[in-house]
Length: 311
Length: 270
Image 1 (cartoon, each protein chain N blue to C red):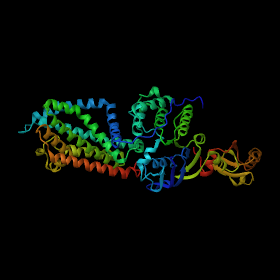
Image 2: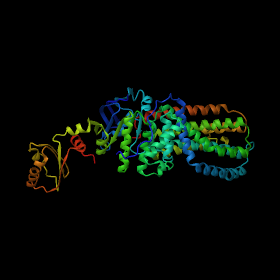
Image 3: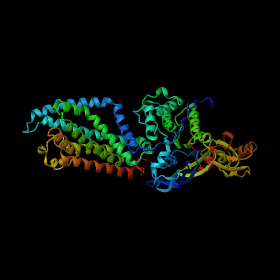
Image 4: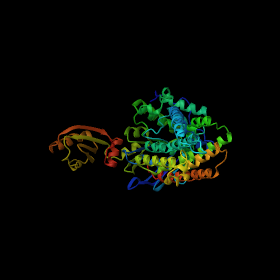
């Protein structure tokens, strides 16, 4: 069992609340996606859970252990792969992983080598195992960072932007290896600002914005909370004079959001309503540069809950 | 997705055996030591520089000054080993500051090692690294001065180790107390100058200006230099100096740990 509970947890740096009143329970064996823009507080949440920062309010417990009162017990359960690779540049990939295993497990030399070899080969890094990590490309270093957790196989595996800097095949591979980790029984937390990663990898997504938990549900249920089920994206030549109420008059329209020249209309029966909306905007003198009708995505969910886009 | 490679074998973790409290401390220390061995050229070049300093500067100066009852070349040779180990021991502070700036410290703090073990491990690693670093220099001095008494050598190395341990603690204290990189560089450089130059490592106290001679006897570098000379030259133990070194170690390891807990966990580097 490795249930994690944040109970009104907060972290204040000076006058800034990096995390505020954050409450969530992460169930044993699930993959939770922490979705939020840069600076939302995702990393601070992880570092509090990993006992690096002490919460300034509320509490966090891991498997029943309070992170402040029993930090040593908590550290034995968690492994964190950071967003920016945190490796000694002077050491090789093999040495980085071998030392990580020495610190986090009781495996003997043979078992450590077997694990490191297995994971490095899977990540196509075996040939570069003796290369100092500071000489590696961003993608290779990122794989080494992820590999720390993949060799360790901790009860709670935390990945911060696990596929940043990676090409598409590598991203798919890392996702597969993270799922494999969960299948073996690990609880997995993935912080990301990539919608597709959150959607494809997570069983549950927690949307974090400005240090607060905004919503937490399965990706499908989150999409279901957006009224309408369809999104009409319109790009105007100049959106400064646009009045959202002019479209809200249609009964099929549930919400209208605007970001600069881009208008997002959440609605039903988009195909039928599209000509009417185009007519309305044209009659108001707007020039429409592009129109796109699509189903609700996690991106739209994020926009609905936070009023902003992730990009 | 099915065509993607996967792990060749089952890597699921067996339960951990009971952890030895000292194993992680040594692993942490060995990490610092292994970094030194990754750059052996540093040891080689510094040792060569030391030999040149000894056979040019120390040889020349000892020919210029004649102090009754004092072999200044020998005095300088032992003292420069002590001053060098103090200087090298300060490096751990730079390492920790750099690790904090680059985020490596966050990673280290997530590892399953208590904060107390972590501090001891880092200080021990810094001290071991410094000892390994000065061994070639120590051997050169021992060879040319004919220091061959094993107990004297062990006693002198113990003094050097205590100095290195205490200085790494001091260096860690500064690293976790100062936030700005520039201020950190200045503070550590001044501190290094003060404890090394304001000591009896390179010059006898009788020849120092008054404003230096007042403080020099209390420098940890003086404790180590006096104690090492007493062991190597006089075949005696300078117990007050060793007691001073032990106090220095205890104070600065304690301070380092206290500052560390308070500042890092409060998020100073965030």
